[in-house]
Length: 304
Image (cartoon, rainbow, N blue to C red; front, side, top):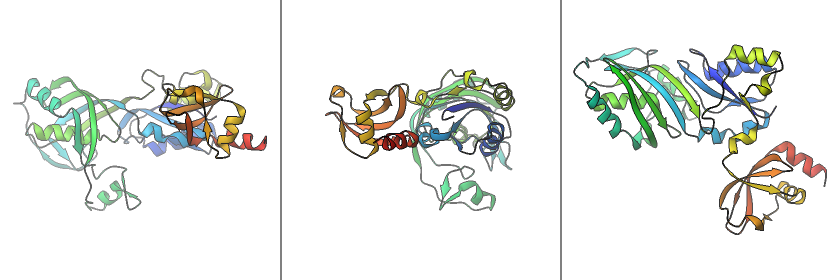
């Protein structure tokens, strides 16, 4: 299998533990995931099998959507209920209009400083390892886009909201920024669910128990939660190659496909209906390979 499985990650499982569980169920060695979820978070975790692992970076770059509950006024070392309490302020005086205004001010392009309790690496080591040692590493702010920050309900001190955001957004940091804007010191997440990762907006997900059952019963491929690799690039412009063109790309040669002169940017490459990789295409129709499926390249070169 070289596709993607959409897993509904359970509460209190790390992404690595979930990955190990899937590995044991499927009895496969080569797999990865498309974007880490915190242990206390639930929801969509994309498991990449076989050659799809090489294309996981496109999942890391994708938009994501979350449903969140946070306790305003509560500040912890981790930004959620797993950490130690740093401070706690009352917020009964806050009203819904104040909160919605602050959320609107945090929409669009904003700057965030990654939290210490995150998987972002510094000198090859995740930041959370430094944090657990009581160390604070200087981090650079990064620009992210908050495309939707919608308040669902407010019942002091608990706020429930939806967030649609770009890659690299830290939801804990966003809610903490909201609490700061509201003058209550910050906020801590009490619930975080990842609803979808683009382009899998309305796709099925399997719990680990459902994955075990469907795989045992040979129903995984028809479950709707297993997707072939090309689904990841369904909205890309498509270029269908001849065997000779595909072989030349496999050998590192320059290929020009004149019939696609009106397409400019990244395109998905296909050979006889099979997805074989990605390339950038110029306005003159010249292809520059970004990544090819190695198994396809090996077959093409072997047939030369």
